[in-house]
Length: 180
Length: 424
Image (cartoon, rainbow over the protein chains, first blue to last red):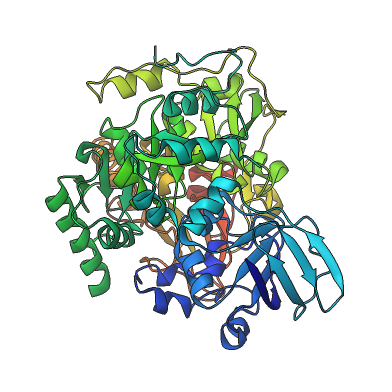
């Protein structure tokens, strides 16, 4: 899957309270959650006003650290972000992204990327073209098991469809062999 | 023996637990599906889990109703109509499905699961709380997860995991008076930083750790989340095993890593001369000695949370507050982790000390964890908290939060400025 979009930048250790402030936790409507994506982060309010469908978030290390709230990935996806590219992701955010179908990629060097750069991103092999700067990057995509879950439409759809007489042994084995 | 999948017996604790859960030998880097022993959710996240579960699987029975638990610990009692509706949704679900319910009169979820005999070594437990990993204090593998994971876990009783590498942290030395497990873990955070254990399991060991009681172990393991670690194990000692055995009819078997287990890294810390530590705004790894920031004016002190809400934590605060009155104009909020802790505190005379000192003692629960709770700060206000996170905005826009031990928090409540507990 190839995605094209404009880059928004945020820093290191952006925690879930910046991505989705705790006061909105009681919300259960995904559309409503989306209106608060990145609200607690630096320039979060500008982001909410100006972000366009298909835009891309690029961040530093440990993105999504903090609480287990899935609202964080749901809100980012809901506001129209097509992929989040980070130096590294916190464990729960990473899982939540896979399970809710928010594409993510890990990229070692993000320092020279500028706000507003236009990217063309291949989610499956991790190839990124920075069209604005005329550069290319190679990011690390998720594992093959995680990709299968995302393609199925998230974890619940995967579990509902992956059942065989023996449970979901086939997928299980493929997942383990496909370690990246 | 649970552990039969041993081709080469050089496994760390997490590798052993995942091998048992997967029914085969696993190694770091593997992606595996493992069987779960318990699936938990709380009043936060829980309603989203139920909605997702029922929209996908309808009335389909959960994988095992005895192994699904709902705990109310965040917005209790319900503080507005939206929260009340969410809580009703959860209560109704437990009636329909027969799952276990721990209502608003119980306390912090993980602590309730521990006290109720639902946690034992080797167990793999998931829940909608990023501090589920404190269950490793009992030798269980607890993992915080998002709502989709929990909905899937409740349906299948299985989830996928990435087996982490393990790092070992050895802690040696005898702690001085008023220097606690919280000071030790803050000191470690100062060096490992907020991503120092990213995608890693930790095993804590060494003489300092071995002597720690269950409360201290909970303090240590809960803050592994703040280093972005998956989990931090402490091999259960006799006291911990006795606590678990006293709560369950099931067989309890301790867990240890193999003598030749392979660790990615070994860190060693000596704590003989460690002084009280404090994490300054706005990051848990912005750690200094308390004396470096002593004198900073404070508006509110919070003693409690999943990290420091046990009886021993309250006793530590009471020792300092006994017979004294908190600084005029300062608010001191004390919250026992569970109703069991509250009852023991009452019996031990701690409520008398707290209430006479001018503290507000509220019902057991998570309390000042995040915005939306009674006790949130006004812009510019300063709080010393025994909780685990001081992210910007988490407890009110423009507020400054410091993280410290119950002893430092209590000393600060008396003087109204950040105070080293050894000085009061």
